[in-house]
Length: 179
Length: 348
Image (cartoon, rainbow over all chains, first blue to last red; front, side):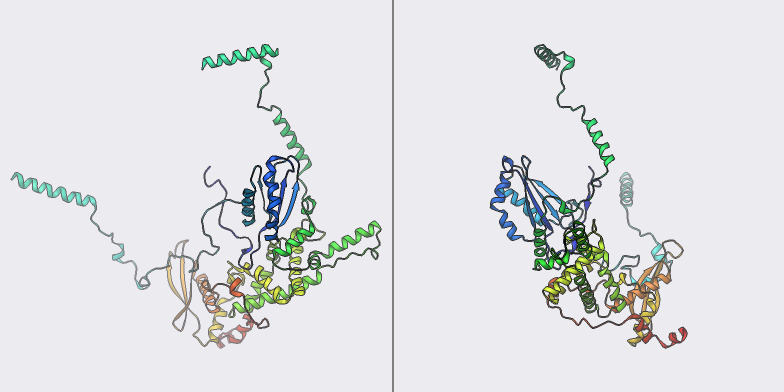
């Protein structure tokens, strides 16, 4: 796939978050898991051992538990901007789930896409828009055009010239040798 | 290759003999021949029924209003009481609908009262405070900007579009108790104002101002304040300013020009006062360039040029004190006062 067909964005920040006060953009998270299946074991362990720490540290996130029989477990995250992400946590260990949860908590809810540049600004120029006279020499103001000086083609010795010179010299030495 | 084919056909023949199936009836594995038909049928059904109707978030199993309300309060860092938050989210239309529902069911409203207050009064209070604080802040940050400009920037921040954007991004939408669904923009805006009003009522005014400072004012980042206010006659205003400062009247001069007979013509005009360059700008025609140069000079004089210092937000504004009652000069009054005498005679 060419890069033009893959969705790409610039760096974005929702609501200029963090300039005033930081608001965690994760709104609610749902743990979907099975009570008996083996692949939900890590999720069950996480709920048992680590979930309370998470809720204590993040009171602004609503946490839901949804036991569902014989389904693979997953984390469903909903963000303030309406975004929604889910991660299947089948066969994951407790720590691995913790890492994914932290990943979801730290996100802004904007869909992940290729970022075109590592920096972005909404107002690209503080010094003003470029126009043909930016950084022009002010002496040009008083110049009367046309000037012969500026119209002349700058003359530099080219490689052809140099070769011709060498050939000429060689020819001259040849002639002198014969004589 | 040939050997393996021969071997394969040989095995099939043996198998077929054993299960007494003819080679033609060998069941193909891995293909669901009917799958396409099933999918087509499903697709047609979906077309007939139409798309899923929008449903409120509360209709899903994983929803608990109390939990959401608690999380909302904690998220914003405002420890409001639960009752206050409930009042913030209760709209008049919702309460009326509930009352009507109970009446229809034959429940006596006096014995089982609806213990809900609507947010009308809080919203009003919040709007007044927000408006006053934003204007005060803008006047403090741009002391030389004219009152019309301050009002324009204030209107931009207080517009329904902006407040709706803010409200939706702090998680108000799902929690609102209102009769309209999907939620109208105006309802979100009202709830946000009510929230500010509630903070003011329950905590104090300072706390509410801090909220405005942290959530509404940062939206000014990246906005050109000069663009929000459209000056009708920039040269007139510039003349008045220079006249009031006893400086020479503005004198536009053509600094440079190029391509005057082409579609890409550009003129560069500078405005001088007492032989000092106070603003310059390019334009497609001389008159456009002159107007733009006047605007540039105004920007420089009002200290709202592109190179102005950053806004006082976040930590920079922690102990910010300003007089909210102070107002800037209105451009119309200013022109009337400081119009040069000759121009005043001509206009009269």
